[in-house]
Structures are given as C-alpha cells and as structure tokens.
Length: 216
Image (cartoon, rainbow, N blue to C red; front, top):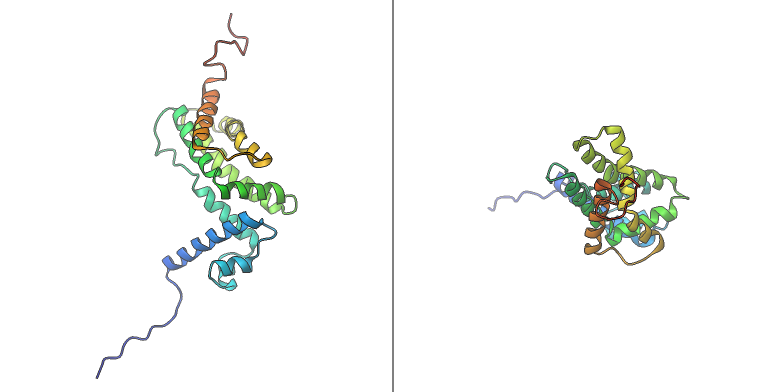
C-alpha cells in the first residue's frame, strides 16, 4: 500500500514571498500613479494589475496616500549613496553623489511622479508633505553629511546644502515644470561637475574676470 502523500495546505506566504509580492505591488502602483496621476489612480485597479486582492493591498497599506508614499520612498532608496563607499575630495564626492541622484530623477517614472506632485499637491496637501520629507532625506541630508565630513558645522552645512541642491537640480526642475527633453547622461555628468565646481571653488575660479571685485 502506497504511503500517504502529505496534504498541501494553503497558508500564509513566507516572509520572502510576502516581500516579493509587496515589491511587485509597488512596481505596479508606481506605473499606475505615473500614468494616470494620484487622483485618478484606483486601488482596485492597482490590486487587479498586481494580481492580488484588494484585501491584501489594504493589509500592506491603509489607503492611497500610504501606497503613494511607499512608492516615492522606494524610488528614493535608489538615490541614496553611502558617502563612505566613495572616497575622494569634496568636489569628487559631491559630483558623484549628484550624478547618482540626477540619473534616478531623470527616469521617466520619476519625472511623471514629480509632475503629479506639482500638479495635484494643491488638492492633496499630503503629497506636499511626502515630497518635502523625501526631498530632505534624499537630496538635502546627503549633501549636508558630505559637508560635515569636510569640516563644516552641522547648522551651516544644511543651509549650504539647500543652496547647492537648488543650483545643481535647477535644470532638472525646469524641464519637469516647463517641458523639454530628458537630461542625457552627458548632460547629467556636465551639470553635476559644473555645479560642484561652482559650489566648491566659486564661479570665477577658472575665469580671468574679476567677478567679486577682489583683484587689484
């Protein structure tokens, strides 16, 4: 007589399976938000496209704002550069960090998402809060950390970091707001280098003109 085969029982997914399912959900949700906007996005449609139930979606995220926040956070994680992993001068490290961040921001979904925030934050102030937090975490704080390691005090480092970010990412922001071709890798490299040199050395460092009136 054949031995009885163990009965396969459906149960809770393993932690690894749950993590994969959640990651797939975020990918689908990011695409949906990017394509139709925050207001028009439907959690039911997102769940269907991710091949999960609406109940499972709500087990992960309480509402659409929480899901959108998670999508932005996941995208932001790709920008984070451990400043200890890249050695060099302040100029070199600042240039490298800016290239990493700008390359992620230049991706189509990132641009679409940024436009959603600019366009819909007036009706949904929660989006402004999400964007502000991500902006601080992924753009201001890493630059401030670089400056602190270079010897600046913490308070001034945050102020200088805000000025640098406004300059370094200004062209990206203009293209998001007013349209234009996506920044190419060559443009990203040139913009990162130029912004870092101006910030570290000063605008007149490689020029013959006396911009500041300091030369005799």
